[in-house]
Image 1 (tube, rainbow, N blue to C red):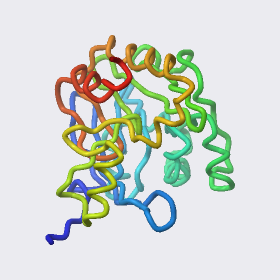
Image 2: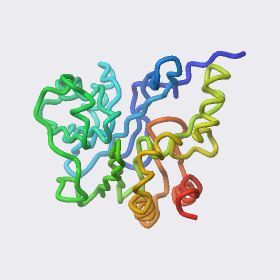
Image 3: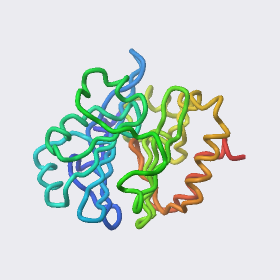
Image 4: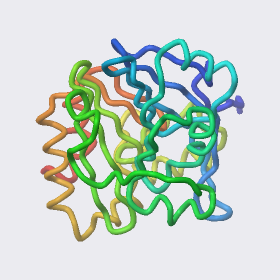
Length: 248
């Protein structure tokens, strides 16, 4: 069987998505219960707002070449930890860009332990952020985890982390991983919310449905994901497809 790195090359570099929007594909991490840890490709989103302020969402490793690219692109103003599972590289970004404010979703500090030992700001409401005029914010709260969703109005770009995962078969390096992604409902071209993550919304389906309907109403053209192939077009259609189990 052909081996694959599982990553989206090139990694650790800005890739244009739309005007003032970039992604950075990072390394593979392994996550899950012991013995069944899956390889997850990682992805950061960077959005440039007024005054060259950069919105850094779910940071990947800050290698020197990427730090130089970021410096040429703008000034990091906000570093975002959008859920309790997306925080690992925030400390190195905060160390490199001391003027940036760090905003964390609920329970990130609980998950991170002593790894985040510096002042941060909460990310738990829908408005009253410095980026409000250009980016909409929507916390989607589950019993275990809250994911905070963002929508960049100018480019019609929706930014998710784990609400949809979309693993490509050819980037999975074993039959077991291919089977697990199929069983978990996160296999491209029909990526969805992982079945295990749905459990955190089992008692909150009305709230989750309302959040998805809000995203659809925004009319996104594209959807950026943290894990797997992201959607470059027909964002509304992809939302309706991915959440058909909830909307029907």
